[in-house]
Image (cartoon, rainbow, N blue to C red):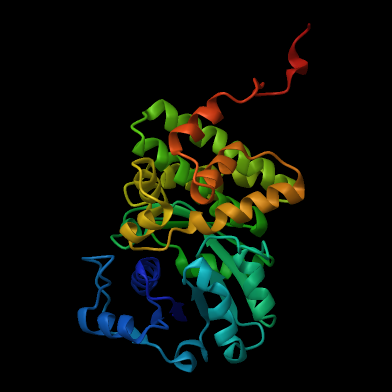
Length: 336
């Protein structure tokens, strides 16, 4: 049995708390919001994850020391926009070599850092890993089977976290390609916004299949230019996570995209979803990375135009369809 703290009392944090408790571990859930802690203590469930109950022996707290000190693993489950402030807040309490696994997805606007890079910068003494893959909280919390990946610089750390999370409903692989995993998990949210916009415009399955296929091409193009492994983008944290985020009714990014496709502004869509829409925060960072590494990201570019430049969703689709003619694979196979 390990002593594990979930840092973040949102739906994803609660789903993982239930999973890890079912695996036999001692669980503490921390939130920076006292009202959220009170809600969890009284109701033993999160309002965004109804029916997923916290066992009575799962502790809920907003005390930093109680959450961090003496824990075998810290699970960083705050929204990406709060990763830095949370890491800075707990830094002095984290012991040398204490393991932290980040389960959020995003790229910091401005610095263009991945979330694990932010944690390492703010908590240099920590041993930082990531967990990613097709894993909506609504399904993980109910014990529906899925498969995900733990990435770490050290195989020993990856295997340690793999053993903590592994269960009959949560199969865990390991990978050394932390950068590729994080880029896949972050950029798929931007493509999911595009998929949702297409749904909101009333387009069909053909459109979504095209967006998913060309979307993973864009993600892999940027990811490999930055040093990620191509195989990562073909796997669970690439195409696997992209498929579920573009297609699922649970996807907040797709849902926000649907609302934008129906004519709402970015802010109106985010307000209606009532959860952090990570793709909005990663979209601008993705374009900055595209410029830095000199790669083309036409779908992500059009998403940015819709989100931040007032471009209509329908015009963005037309501009994507009418781009210069391209080939899908290198043409050196033709004889003439």
